[in-house]
Image 1 (cartoon, rainbow over the protein chains, first blue to last red):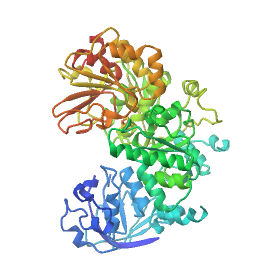
Image 2: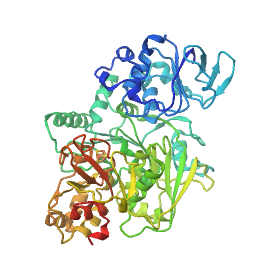
Image 3: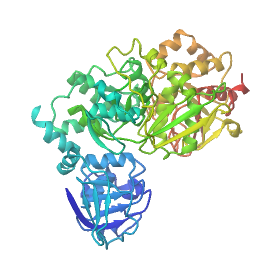
Length: 167
Length: 428
Ligand code: SF4
């Protein structure tokens, strides 16, 4: 699975309240949540992004509560992938389970400019390419079952497709 | 489990368990693996959500009813109609799918005290639970971690789940434990040192001469709070103390797994604890930790002894030893909550409950109750509590302007008598 898009850059410790504020948790419709994505820290953000864009962040992205709404809001906004130095553990699980590709990458993220630079991400190979200068950074690749899980749109869809018929 | 996998070198206990279950020679931190789980746990808060997801997937049957454990413990005996209806969903699901590990009022306990007691946890097992303190079972040499309700639904349906292999940090405790200092003090001290993000994503391996002598209840207290340092799991490698506990409880065959001599750790941190004082976590975070000597003049409205952290028999024995022949301070309320029905029965037989009642404590049937501010001892605005539980966030036990301090059962019992936070020696 290869993804490419414009990057939007965030710092360290972006918590789930910043991603989607608690006052919007009354819905679980991804597109409705997406209208308020990052609203409290970057009010115009939902109107800047285009489907396929990527979020780039520092360490501990998604810390705070275990709300599944956070990755749902990101996915609903059409963000194709989040590349961060590290993720909070429950956010990581939730993102994979709802079918939002995310990748940990230690290097090369510091120089990226919001709304200008582009990244290409190869989930199967674990490669992150800076489209401007061609620099390639390495991350742990996704094993085939995880790629399938993400391609199918998450854990529920994966389980259903893979095992549903048998029961 | 194939024994061949256990011979490989350079791996920690958790890496070896995950490699064996994935059918791989070895795994490394960061690897993603899909593996079969030995047990999937839900409670009255998380199981109803998982059941709804399970039904949404369209499954008619669970993968294997014997792998599922359902324990309504948070709002039981049910505090209101809503909580009664949540438990009803769980009870019906258990009946419908022939789930025998469903524990109702009178037979239950707080999940993380109950499962080990029922022989549902063994060395080398992989256990997921839709509850963050599932990490408790690492105390018996299992790999156990908290997951979401969607994960639980999928595991109930297919008996498998995915994991990212954590790196391991080894914590060594040297010297000896001073009197009145317990597993709770060791883990509070550790969280105070490394912070609530200090072990994020990691497995915490607890080891060293102090751990080798620590009883099983103290070990469970330590593994229980690994999550409070952000860890994925906490564990202690099985030894004679573990096997003695498992005898007569676990009847199935199991193969204990140990870290290799040359295991690769993310970090090793050593503490000498011979001079350690009892530790207190001040509000509003479990890493806001100070020795008891620095907790001066903190007057208490309520003291709680219980929870999946410290509601086990050793905890009640220590508390009773201090409370025997004494009375709780007239301006303080003491709640004692044995964590399971079996612990309740043992405390009854040993005369511990009589000691608590004579000391003017309220003794409750097993429940999470006040630990999460659910019921059974909610705090009013401005009230201060001292508790043997694991979290002291804002409003955890009631009003947002109430405060919770965390400590060991010994400090809790002594402080209930004094009416303020004290070292147990002050009232003995
Ligand atoms: S006792 Fe407290 S921490 Fe433990 S399972 Fe119950 S609510 Fe959670």
